[in-house]
Amino acid sequence: MKEPGVREPRGYRMSARADSAEHTRERIVDAMLERFATTPYERIRLDDVAADAGVAVQTVIRRFGGKGGLMITVVERELGRVALAREQVIAVTPADTVAALVGHYERYGDLILKTLSEAALVDGLAELAAQGRADHVEWCRRAFSGHIVATDDDVRARRLAQVVAVCDATTWRILRHDGGLTPAETERALLELLDPLLRP
Image (cartoon, rainbow, N blue to C red; front, side, top):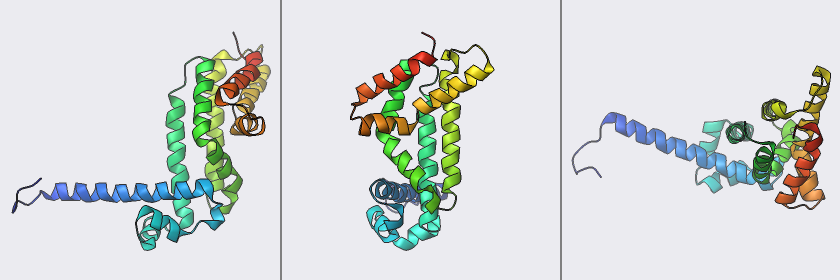
């Protein structure tokens, strides 16, 4: 705490304002994410998001340009978090990788699938969704290519496509929601699907 009558340095005041602005921005993004997780995009109202974040709706519009801009910011942030989490399970055993993938889908799976299903409603979101899918394919390649059994390039390409399909969020949803499996059972099911494609 500063002493009475002692002015804080200008740089300190600017830093404090920047920190406060960033904290406000994150609150707004978090509020939009929570709304989107449970509400169809077209039914989300900026007034509600602003109220959830404890700010005026004009603050949301000024910072993000509107609901579409805010939605893009949410997806960009979450894609970054997904990429960081996935990087941490590269170069471990397939079993460890699948366990981490299922844990990741337990947190993000429904949100990923909802984003893909509503991507056409927001300008620019379809492109982000396509980038997310491309990142998933690349992640599967790096995570599993050293374990894939293949006699030539054509077989390797086919095996990789199979690995991508097994590791897709839709496969997780089918096993967890349609099949009623527990997370542990889902891990085992995914490994059983992957097993013929990978070296022991």
